[in-house]
Length: 266
Ligand SMILES: [Zn+2]
Image (cartoon, rainbow, N blue to C red; front, side, top):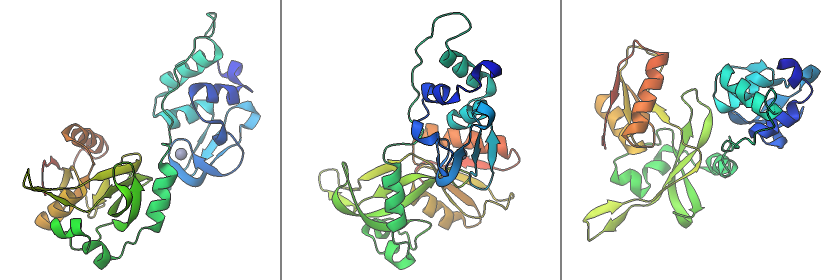
């Protein structure tokens, strides 16, 4: 199959759902892990080859490796996708369902908002949400005005960067000013995500003896970190299922560490 694919990778890669704009021998964002100029598609000897500088861990390989990187799949899955794109061994070409785009439409908006956010400790801590949740400094977040379908025009937001566990930027969560709901007698806050979801990690991840608390949101991570002190707190920006998913992911990488899922920490 490798030989049948040679010289046809541009067609194969677009057929499996990788946007044409990534298929250039020039530095640009990676279809697998984003960034700005870490990726280049050089298609050496028609092998579909590429180079990705990643977040420090560089990766290079042929078209099969690229599909695995973009879709987080194993070799067998990548081979099936290529086989389908080539039209199968003898059967007529099966139309393949395009996977979701690897980079969300709002990724560049997220990136721009994050670059413009003010990350000054005192400024973040003076936001009404920070005051309500007793967040006393920036804890990796910023503050700025953001417009969005949920937030409305020019909302004064806390802006939390969302990253992969490896530290690659994925998107942002914007938290608006809390509004008092008199009927329910509680504060309500509008949150909106741009780009894709990721996590926020507080604390020293290199110290393997520290327990890792996996919590839902930004305020939870801050309160956990302040309460326990010597720990790592990971906000995963999602429900319990997402917390469990991350706990398993971390456990596979570092089975010796202690992982604790905490619901409603703040
Ligand atoms: Zn990459």
